[in-house]
Image (cartoon, rainbow, N blue to C red; front, side, top):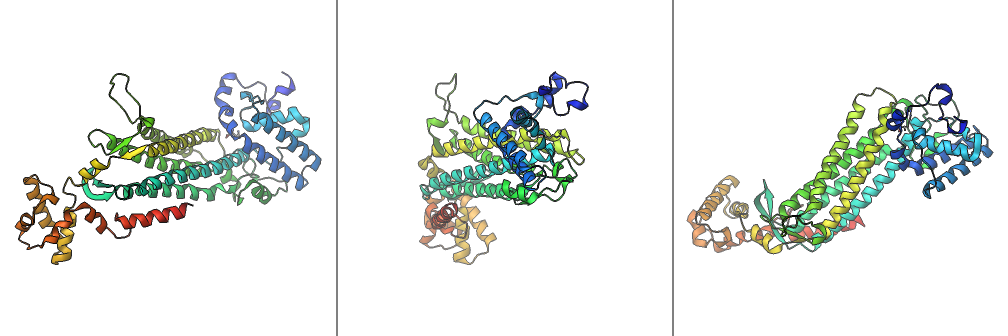
Amino acid sequence: MNKKNKTVWQTRFNNETSLIFQNLGSSIDVDKRLYKQDIESSIVHTSMLGKQKIIDKKKANKIIKGLKKIKNEIKNNKFVFQKKYEDIHLNIEKRLFGIIGDDAGYMHIARSRNDQVITDFKMWLLDATKEIINDLNILIKIIIKKSEKNVKTLMPGFTHLKNAQPISFAHYLLAYVEMFKRDKKRFLNNMENLLENPLGVAALAGTSYKINRSYTSKKLGFKKPTNNSIDTVSDRDFALDFLSSTAICSLHISRVAEELIIWISDAFNLIKLSDKVLTGSSIMPQKKNPDPLELLRGKTGISFGSLNSMLTVLKGLPLSYFKDLQDDKEIVFNSFDNLKKSIVILIEVINNLQPNKKRMLELANEGFTTATDFADYLVQNKKMSFRNAYKASAKLVNYAEKKNKKLNKLSLNEVNNLKLNLSKDVLKVFDIYNSINLKSSYGGTSFKNIKKMIKKYKKEIK
Ligand code: ARG
C-alpha cells in the first residue's frame, strides 16, 4: 500500500482495519454533514496557531488556502469521501495532505478529534437551533392569523373529551401558540450551553502549547471557552438538551395532530381540511383521510426514541471520550430532520384547515355547557355559596336532561321550579355568547381578551 492511502495511525499498526469493521466504525456517511463547520473551525484553529507563533504564518496561510479549496470541492460535489478515513475530520485532513503536502501535518497541533468533533457539532447545533426557532415563529404566525379570523367562532371546550364550557375557536388556537412559544424558549435556553467553546481541550487534558481559546471562541461565534477539559470531551448534555426540546416540541405537535384527527372524524366533524392535506383509500372510494396528521403523531414516537437512545448511550460512560459517543450525530440529525419536516407539515395543515362553524356552534350548545354560568349567576345575584349554587344548577341540568331540552330552551317557569324566584334576566346565562364574554379574567376566553392577546402576540413576534 502506498503512503498516500494510509490512515494517520498506520505507523503504529501492523494490519489495515478490516473492511467489516470499517463499515461499522466509519461515520463519514453521517458526519459529512459537518463539513462546513469542520473547515471553519480548522481555519480558525490554524489562524490561532499562526497568531500564537506555534506554527509560522506562511504555513498557516497555506493550510487555510487548502482548506478553502476543500470546502469548494465538497460544495461542488468534487470531493470523494472515504470510509477508510473514518470521519469528516480525517477525510478533510487527508485531502489537505493531497493538496498542500506535508505542511498539512501542522494543522492538528494542540487539538484532538475529541474537541474538534464537539466544536463542529455545537456549531451545527447552534444553527439548527436557530432554524427551529425560526420555523416555530412561522408556525406561530400562521396560527395567530387563523385565530384572528375566528375570534367569534364558537365551539365547546372539552375536558375528558366531554363538552365542558363554550369557548372561542381562536382561544383554542392561541393555546397552541403558548405551547409553541414555550418550545421556542426551550430551544433558546439551550443556546447558553452551546455557546461554550470546546476547541483546545485536545484529547482530554488540555495542551502544553500556548494556545488562545478566547480567540477561537470569538472567531467561531462562541461566548467563552469551556472550563474543564475532561468534562468537555465527555459532555453531550447539549445534545440531550436539543433532543429533549425536540421531543417536547414533537409532543406538542402530536397533541395538536391528535386533536385535529378527532375533530375531522365523521363523529365530531368540527373541522375540514382541503384535499391538499388528505389522502384517499385504495379500496374505499369515498375516503379522505388525514394521513399527514397521523404521520405527525407517528414521528413523535421516533423523536421520543431519539432522546431515549441518547440517554441510553450516555448512561454507562465513565469520563472521558468513548467511541460510543460517535452515534450522537446520527441521532440528533435524524431528530432535527423529523422536527423540521413536522413543523412544515403542521404549517401546511393549518393553512388548509377550516372550522366547521355550524357544527361547532351546534356542539357548543350541547351537553349543558352553560351549567357553570348558571351556578355563577346564582352566586353573584343570589348571594349563594358556590356549592349550593352548583347543586341548584345540577338539579336544573337533571330536569333539562329528563325533558330532553337544552338549557337555553328552558322557560323562566321551568327554571323557577327551583324555587329561587329568579327574574327573566337569568335566561341570558344560557346564551353561549354571553357565557364567553363573561370569561374576561386575564387569560380567559372573552372576545375582548382574545383580541388583546392577539395584539400582544403579534407585537412580540415582529
Ligand atoms: N468521529 C468521532 C466521533 O464522532 C470523532 C472523535 C474520534 N475520537 C477518537 N478518540 N477516536 O466521535
